[in-house]
Length: 444
Image 1: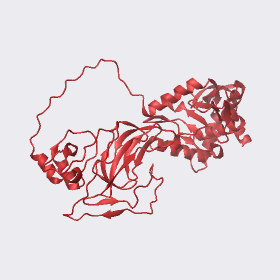
Image 2: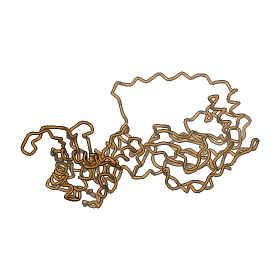
Image 3: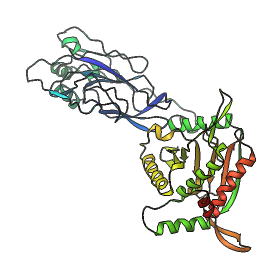
Image 4: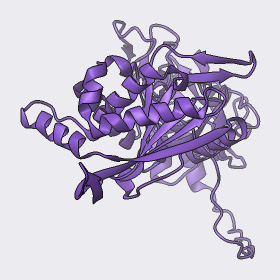
């Protein structure tokens, strides 16, 4: 007798409590192998393919695409150790896997077992559907002489194993969920599908009249990534007494230094990487801004490492990937890591760990063609540096009016962790390094 295993939405890490089903990768009746991705979900942090730790036949899916499920809610049920033509049968009941690439011993191989033609296929026990995620499944029935029509349900276990039976039903548009099988424990047989084909079609039920909706404007659910961003920014405004200071800086020498670096060959150095290197040097001089406030303990916690977040715009919205231990990286390493994380972000494949744990954020909104902003601190950090576009402007240089490349720098900081003197000192140091990269070299 096969065993029906229930696979629940796993804890995807970093305090996430729910996920939205974006796309099912398997259908009811499909054969899955251990650790095969079965569904793509969108969390508040990233898009994740969720693998199933069991191998066998999918007997139920819980939740339609677009549905939000809490962690611990059932995703699918799998009949382990059952098959008609060829079924992957695991040596263990499951891998314990949560995400692809974690927790599985791939040195073990799955056994394949073929049922000979004419042999009896083992029945699939119907798994109870937990409420309220999915409607109740069809109950197993004793052997009956003919199939009985049942009320169709949206989701639930289908007691059918043979791919031939599934194909016959699919080719003729028969919903297997609407049948009760005449086989052992309600197993749907070929004869049941053929009987359903001979049955007269029910009278068509007229569709209900459309309900008039008042023209109240487009409503967009504040959920998923957009909802989390909204909550995070609101919490930042509620909890952090922030203040902003800004300064214009002449970036002509910084841009010339970058051009000289890239002229010698090797990987290209980005402007963002140079600004990040300046930030880490500034945080070494002003560690108050690389901290967080522990409200429970009523303490300021100064953090030993700089995990530098940077704002990246993607099709899913604004995300803030984090470069770990940025203070230990040079301009070339920072350029490579920024490029890697940006590419992964645009593909929607950032892991939750790539988006959390930041201690300071660098926000380059100059890419949108704007000069200035008052950034909102990325809670629970203590500060964010905003960088506007670098644009040619009239500037007094060495006592004469000249056209120089000018950038506006904005620093928003938590006034609990420092006063304006510290924040101004940090921002002035950053501006000095932008105007004269030799200042940065002196501090290295």
